Image (cartoon, rainbow, N blue to C red; front, top):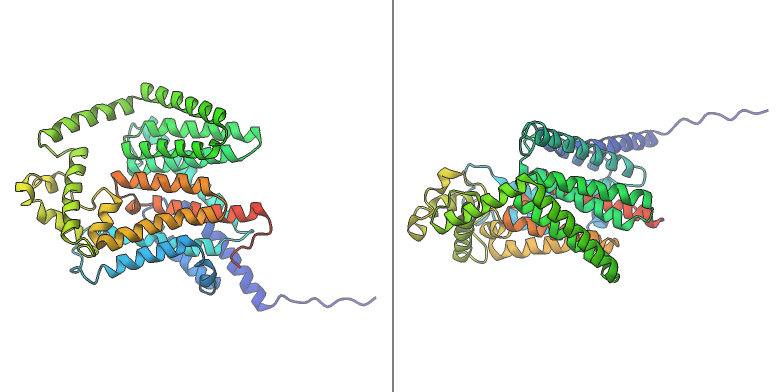
Length: 412
């Protein structure tokens, strides 16, 4: 009997195996590290490095077919060009650099394949659950808003809860098995209860409106089911409104701030937003086409408030340090004018088109609507952690949908 000679693995096979291990590790770890101020940047660099080792640049032509990739590249290009017609950005928080954080979508999506997808999902779920448990502890036990140990504000935590609610409800409406529908629905209600305990008014309103849009788009052809679900949601929301001390506090605070604003006192959350929007729109009208240049809006506000409208806002820089304009559209308009506004609008449209092209139109509409609404009361695109969280969700949703359809081509 002849024995077969053992054939050693080729060096190329070994390299490929190590590349696969590295890709799985970084996809797993990235979902956890994105919530950490100290780990997110380093992990993003590591993700890009592994993507390069995985021959990611060779797949750029393929991945650039995704509308969202084009939208991200256009937005980042416009922001970068804005540096040319503005003075060198003065020292400050430089939050405009966070626009470039959307670029992480490219290597993350490119690294995903059928075998690596579970690792990415596990990392995302592990990170979300850990942060959620920390937030629940801070809210229920410590009596604190947000998650101070992780440098997560109550606005970011509330937005995170809102995204979780939208995803759980979407899964509950698309999965056929009853054994999954109930836990997913109850999970979304639990997250909504926690969100009502946070002081973020904008994220809560954006969540509720996005949820109603999701329900409408899902059941628009089934009128009886649609009316029944909307009525049930309305009852739940009314119960949370009535039973939430935090929400009642926010309503009372809003009423008080409106009265103070009418009296010309703008050193409140609402008053500050009204003032900075006023100054921001004035600034856009001064340079409507190309804005004041990337990095300049912060110093523009602090200089303009001294004389604008007789100086009625001149004391606001002492109330809170200026870092952004609390509105995505005004923010990008101040940096790069109409050019930036059009680029940001195309970016949101391309985000929806990407999910729509992968047969996820309802999820795409709900998420983009949530982003749009959140950006009306704050610079949602410049939040720490949340934009990265959303593009990772989008990449995983695309890969998941391809696997569900069966035979779908991954980025190979």
